[in-house]
Amino acid sequence: MTSASVRAIDKSGNHITCKALLHTCSTTNFITERLMKRLKLPKTRCSLTIGAMNELNTTAKYFAKVTIKSINSEYERTLLFFIVPIIADAVPGKSVSRERFNIPKNIKLADPEFYKPSNVDLLIASGPTLSMFCTGQIKLNDNEDLILQKTKLGWIIGGHLNFNNTKKKSQSALKRLESLKKKLKNNKEFEKQYENGMKEYIKASHMTLIDKKDESSDGFYIPHLPVIKESSYTTKFRFVFDASAKSSNGNSLNDCLLAGPTIQDDLFSILLRFRKHPYVLIGI
Image (tube, rainbow, N blue to C red; front, side, top):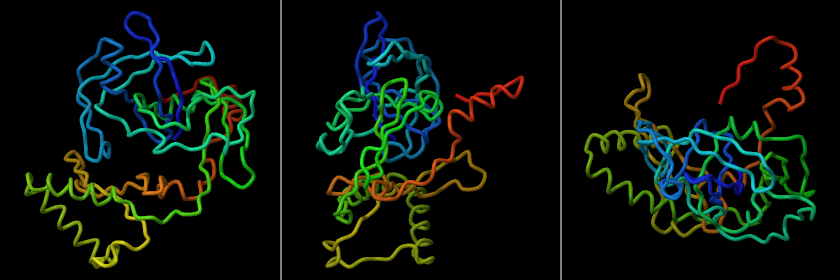
């Protein structure tokens, strides 16, 4: 997941610059209520349950068609966005030094101020994100898993910097737990399922209790949230662990893990397949 600065076109045709997250795991595009109020675009009523977002499930009640435009070129695209109260906290979690990235001077970044924390108002799903990728990739540092990828929005930065201190305790886990306790008190059935789920984790040795004296020791505590999906025929209740939550040093567990290999075919191979068959199917 990386960021890009884009221009969203409002009802009068004016351009509003905002930050978007390019998310290769999401299947749905999202826009914040804050940006929609500024755009003043028509919206359509709906009901979409979104799991594991904003700590607990939320529901999108409206969607809208929004046209976004590159800050670097004439490229623009109209997409369907579901409207939600919030997408993410400020990205990045804290300021970083731009000089650490050794970005070539002739490169036009999709997000020129990627190193400064700022609010996120759009999330672009995997389909539109991958369709924006172009041929062109630059490795930024020899000893770091960090690259520049060319897209129709400009060059984006992918990967992460290597950090020495990656095991500081995350206070967000405790804060989320306290928030969850308050919500459980209002739903006894939910509280019972949660308690039984925790007991199963202890029984399977997936979770152990720590002493008060150990709370200050080094370690990373992953925040979690219970998710209920009434429409599921198999698992109606499950736990989701948020490994993307930042620790006190600004890093998450995901940041410190080695990224896996690229699973999609290269763009050249995909284009060649289009010439082999009379019909093609594209998912957006």
